[in-house]
Amino acid sequence: MEKSLQKKLEECDKLQQSLWSYRPLKEETLKSLKEYYRVGLTFTSNAIEGNSLTESETKVVIEDGLTVEGRPLKDLYEAAGHAAAFDFVYTLAKSKSLEDADILNIHRLFYEKIDPSSAGCFRKVPVFISGSKYAVSPVDKIKSRMEKLVDWYNNNENKLHPVVLAAQLHKKFVFIHPFVDGNGRLARLLMNLALLRNDYNIAIIPQIMRSEYISVLELAHTDDAPFMEFIADRVIATQSDILRLFRETMPEPEAIPFEEQLKSEISNNPGMNAPALALKLARSLRTTQRYLRLLTQKGLIEFRGVAKKGGYFLVSS
Image: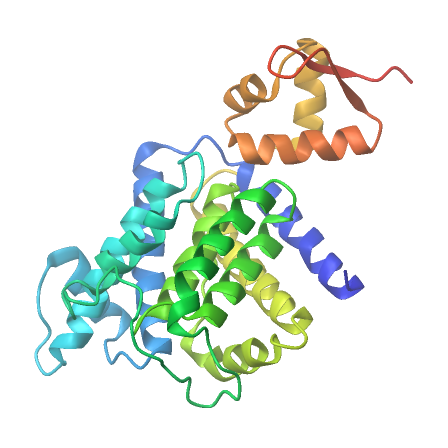
């Protein structure tokens, strides 16, 4: 891994630790944060693809169900569809694994008002990407490549850093290009699903960065380091924005690194397993397992007993 990317990933972890320190958030705060992302991601992701709605118009369409005079009907459908797909992605954040059907359902929710016959269905015709010199998957390879992509994701979810996992999922999906339309928006939704499933905040790519975004994604066919760093930068920017809002509206909490929280809990309650630690510390099981693995690699804790019945203990110095 490039040193510059490693440094950015460390910054992502540091900022996420700061955001975690505000937990548990009140239900009203969680709801408003979800709506903040719902509008922001819907607006930016659609704008990248040429949608004409402003952010305030997007908010009116998806929150109030109103139309906007003078805007194409397709643009209104894209906003409403993306918001529905976003809501479904939030439910998938807590599912045990990613399934092939989940991706089809995300696309169906996004595209069903635009073209019901193509919504939630892999394309049956070849497509070409304007501005790219690379071909996407042929029709007869889409199903098998999507199955391999889902297997890859589930096999690597607990192995890769969440930001790398999210960026790789985005890249691999776009290179397959399984649908007639909506592939870019699906890629960004899947990227954010990977982040949410690992206790990370959503990352937003603003329309103003469209040219750079497309450029590094094209380059990723031969060198994906710039794309990885681009996504890491967007994670950092979005984290910093949310952290600023938290600091402006809530008291500054005592920031205790999650590794220290785990060590303290294991010290006080030796033998706890990963699910129990995740529940006690209000983190996802995937995040808890990732940090337990890091502590184990550092020689600070050890697992004793057999799988499913054993637990973690501090290593005596």
